[in-house]
Length: 81
Length: 254
Image 1 (cartoon, rainbow over the protein chains, first blue to last red):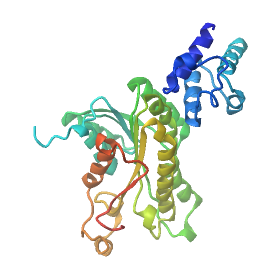
Image 2 (image 1 turned 120 degrees about the vertical axis):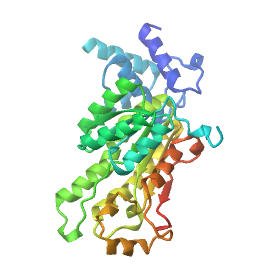
Image 3 (image 1 turned 90 degrees about the vertical axis):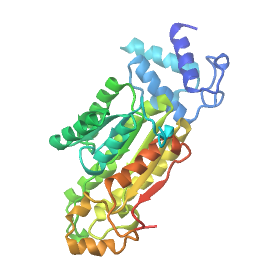
Image 4 (image 1 turned 180 degrees about the horizontal axis):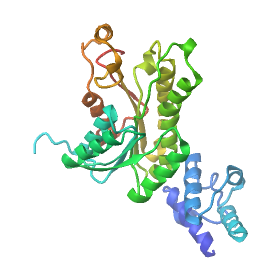
C-alpha cells in the first residue's frame, strides 16, 4: 500500500468504529463489506475533503465502491492540480 | 455544595446561541454560561444589547464571545461559523433562537413579510444546522435545541408566516433528530407560549388579559422559565431525549 492508500484505510477505520482495521482491504466494498451507512459516507467524504483540501461532488461519490476507488480518485485529483 | 447538580456542568463545552443579544436568547446564553459553557452569542444588529449581554455573562463569572451575522444569509453563516470553528475547535451546543415576526392578515401579507419570517426563523435554523453538523459528527457529540412556539402547534390568526415557520421548525427538529442520532447528536424543540419581554410586549392590557384567560397558570412565562428547559435539554440529564417538543406555556396548549 502506498502512503495515500494507507491514509485512506486509516480514515475509513476512524469513521467505521465497529470495523477492525485489519479487515479493511483495498478491495473492500465500503457499503457492502464494511457496512457503511449514508451518514458514514458523509463523514468519510467530509474527512477526505479536509484531509486532501478538495471538494468532492455527489456524482463523484456515487462512483466510489471500494477503498481502492477512493485512493485512485484522490490520486487522480492530485495529478490534475 | 448541596443543590449542585453535576449533570448541569458544561465546562469545556462551547455553545452558540443565535439571536442571543436580547430577550429569550439572552437568558439562554446567560444560563448556559452559568453552567460553565463558553457561549458564542450571535446577533444581527443590536450591538449595544449584545455587548451588554456579554458583559453580564463575564460579570457573573462566565465567558463568551460575540459573533455578528445574519442567520438567514447562508454565505454569512458559512463564513462566520467557519471562523468560530477555527477559533474554538468545536461547537457542541447549538440553540436556534433567532426569530422575527411580521404579523398581518393573510390577504394583505406581502412577499417580503412572508419571506423574511421564513428565512430568519426556519431557513436560518437550517443554515446553522447544516454548518455545524460536520463538526458535531466528527466529535460524535452534539446538542441542538430549536426554539419553536405554541404558534407552531396551535396556529395564531394574524401570524400565518410565523406559525408556518415555527411549525416547520418542529418538522426540521424531528427529521434532524432521526438523521443524526447515530452520531449521538440530540435534537429537540422548545415551544414557548406567551413570554414576558417577548412579542407579548406588543399587546395592550385588554389584549393581554384576553390571552391570559387561556393560560391555566394565569400569567406570562418568563425568559428564565424557558431557558431552564433549553439548558436541561443540553445537559447530561437529557441523554435519552431526542426529537421532542417541550412546551413551556403555562398550560396554554396541551
